[in-house]
Image (cartoon, rainbow, N blue to C red):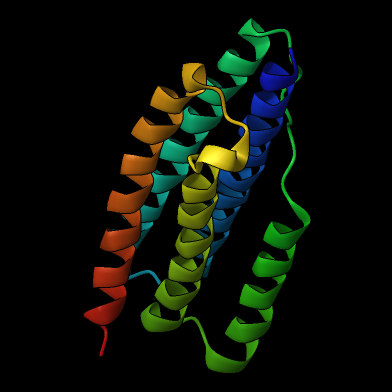
Length: 152
């Protein structure tokens, strides 16, 4: 039973950071200029990807008798506040917004890596879900990084 409880804790951490990501991409999309519709579409797609991740993780927790988190992490709120402060001083340019999005993608990428470490406590029953979601996170991270790099 302890393994299931630890697994639920790990999955809930992933739910929180996915919720951070949903809020972060929604916030970043609002900071964009009218001519940045291409980024808005990407941000909305990644926001929706995290919503799907949350749904899948919530189902896995519920099926195993746990209670899924519904909120965001404290660090996610701080990250969005920093995005607001930075936008005040640097403007709402693409590169700044992409830099902040990449920082968020770095955080979720690390959370998934940590969840899959042997000592994380994640049971093998949940590893396939987390591994599959991690692949989407890596692809998204690389896309945001490439977009950021192209803004030189």
